[in-house]
Length: 127
Image (cartoon, rainbow, N blue to C red; front, side, top):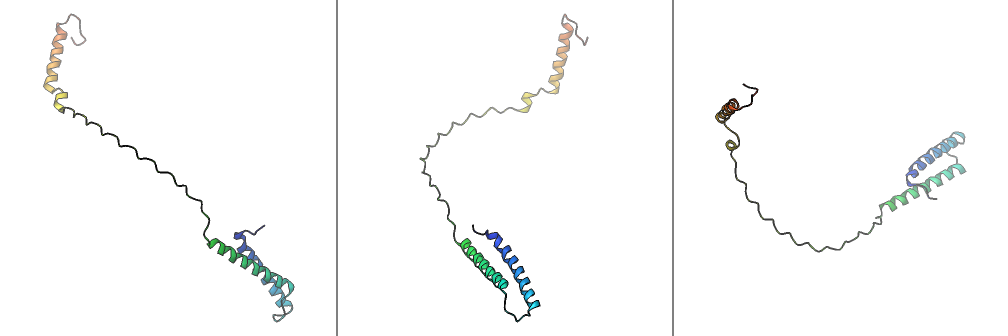
């Protein structure tokens, strides 16, 4: 099973820490001039292989990816344009004064209603 790309950096970092400890232990016990132990050599080989794998994956990531083929749809026949609608006849303009009775007309109508109420046979509430 292949190693995950994201974990390579962490593996290299952990390997470097182990290698550093091994080198420090060797330098402390045998001195800095002593040859590398088998453990150090194994850690160095592992680190080199991890770095190569990381470089390989980085190169693969730079390559163009395979993309899905775009589906080309057939062109539809254009629809015939609709005939324009006939214009509507304009409405007759109404003035505001035609709709609303004036104050004088209102008072005349009220007086006429009162006269009609007085002349009527029934009793109204106002008389």
